[in-house]
Every structure is written in C-alpha cells, then in structure tokens.
Image: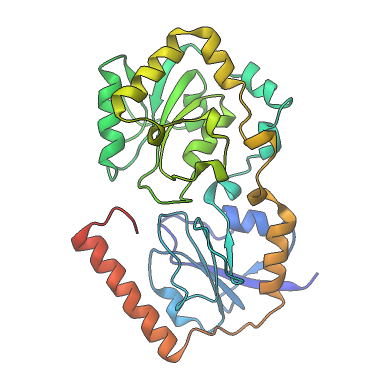
Length: 308
C-alpha cells in the first residue's frame, strides 16, 4: 500500500493529528503519514494556514459552514450538493468509534435493555451560541427539573466528564444544534440513540435523510415550544406510548443510511489520492476565495447571521 502524506491544519484548539475521526476512518483503508511536507492537506474553518500550502486541499467541517470551492480542491460537509469534488459526510459518521450496526433492530434491543431509565431529561451545552435551545431548556424546566451537565446553565455542581454515561439514565435529552440549516446534523442527536435517549431536536429541516423522524421529537414538527413540551409530558406519563416511541427504528426502514457506506467513502478518497498532488487553488481563483472568506468573517462578526 502506497504511503500517503497528509496534514491537518486550521482545526480547533486541541485538535490531534492522529486522534480524530477523519484520520481514524481513512487509516482503515490507507497507509497514512502525518508530514510537514504533505501531498494532501485537510483543513477546516478555524484559520488560514491552508493558503500557504501548494498541495491538494480538502476542506472538512463539523460546523455549519459552507465549503468555499474557490479555496479547496475537494470538500466534506453537511450540505446536499451534487459535485464530483464533494462528499456529504456529516460529522456523526466519523464521530468517535461508534458503530451504526448497534442501532439496527434486533441488535438495538440490547441498547434499550442496557439503558434503563430512572430520570426525566438532561441537557449538555458548553457554549451559549444558540439562544433558542437555552430558552427551550428554561421552559421545559418549569414543568420538571432538567439536569444540565455542561458548562452552560449547569445544575449538577460542575461539568460532566463522560457525556454518554451522564445521559444513560434519562428518558429525554435536549439535542438542539447550535444553528439550523438543511443537512446540518452533528453528533448531538446521534449520541442519544446509543444511550436509548429520546432526542428533543432542532436543526436540519431534512433530518429524515439521516434518521427516522418517528424516533425523534423534532421542534420543527410543532407549532410552538409549548406544544412540543405537551408531547414530552404525554410520553413521560404514558408508558405504553413511551415504549412504542423508543421501539421505532433509528434509521428509516431500519436500514443504515447511505452516508455510512464505506465503499462510497473509499471511492471518493481513491479519486482524491490517485489524482494530482498539486492544488488548483491559485491566481484569480485564490483571490476570489479569499474575498469570499473575508465577507463571511465580516458577516459573522458584525451581522451575526443565523446561517453560515
């Protein structure tokens, strides 16, 4: 197997080159080496270091940010785009070492059995970006205590150390995304399924492309926060309805979605790694990309748009 020299730049603080979802996923298929002289650079939205490289550039995002195709040769993201140089690969697909097979019945019965419920609802948030989810948390708390284990609105004497262990006893979890955009689905809802917790969700208006909407309490399906809270109360008080809800398949028709298809992922990266090792981001294309990046940064800083 040929050695493929790569590097990760412009990711969040504390990002580890050899301990992240993309590296773990690709190392199953390829012989990777982290190099200061890479042939392929993976970059994200937290800086501009990628502009100094002349090798092939692959944009990766776990944030609600659109790919800037004037700056990248290829991109991985949440958007539903039909481009040869783009792969829809939501963050949850390569989140830690979770196995989607565990979420398919009859195997999923084990998840249900191993996560008995003794508590009402939890909330784990470490930033206050989304005012909508904070407002919903406060409204639901007026009905019954919601245990908050994150840095924001913490109610349990400090942030938790293990999110999944914290979630296990709860019937419900407020799993609102930071922002809403079609296709933007992170690990928040995915983690709920592995602890047999019902996600109270807000985010993508196309969630059915990723998971079974019948296994989700989606804020977008209700006229108001209050009507959704009424539904939560009903499921909490009606054991038969609750059991029927959690026995709905996680995936539509109990079939793992195409986004987990390893052949699909490998075909895309075979195309990348067998192609040019030089970026096409140069000249006027690079200049346009830089202007678009500056425009986006200005809008985020001063206009605070809902969608990025």
